Image (tube, rainbow, N blue to C red; front, side):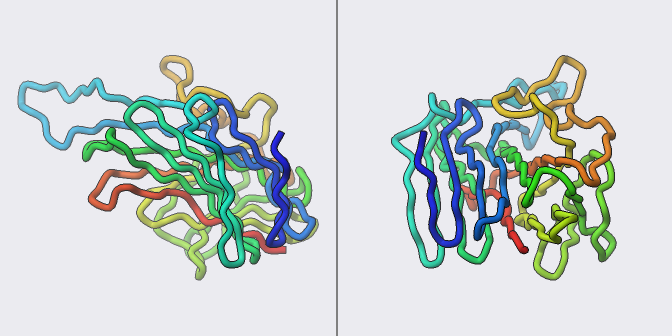
Length: 265
């Protein structure tokens, strides 16, 4: 077991999982619980041809495919770096021709940044990369939470489980989704990068919906996390949020994906 990290107003526990990268758990800011668990369950990769010959039927045998980030793909040891008014926890992974650097940054003003840098010899101009983060915030406690999506110029309640993509709208600080604790009014807001084509799946927390798991469901059914959607109500419940980025290869690679998370009491 790794010793907790306590600095810059934060106290966090962490470990490297079998298949979900760096797991952050029992994260507190100024003594208040902010994040019960945060992980990177998987990164899927699609190969999409830009052009087809007339005799081709459009089918492509390249993906989507998945390689887990975990103890078996870990390169070296995780490391802790400090910077002005914060610290970061970093781990490197190698899966086939791909390299990934996963990072969790913590700032003394209450911001967090779960990040993933994608690089290596396997990069291809026809690839789209899909990192899937999972956040079980449990702000101050597991219950009495609400989830909201910024849309039509205001914050709207996400009353039932569902898929809530980024449609180009955000509040004045760039936030698109947020989870609010009814009792205290504390919240964690999520700000995506505009070029990630991000989306959020809001789900009622259920035992067993926890890594490690495969991104594939049964034949003919939805892949995770869409497979978990069941129209359950979210208000006042224990909620888990999946943040899915869609990173299309371009000349800017290596590319670092991931949202900003901001806690406010």
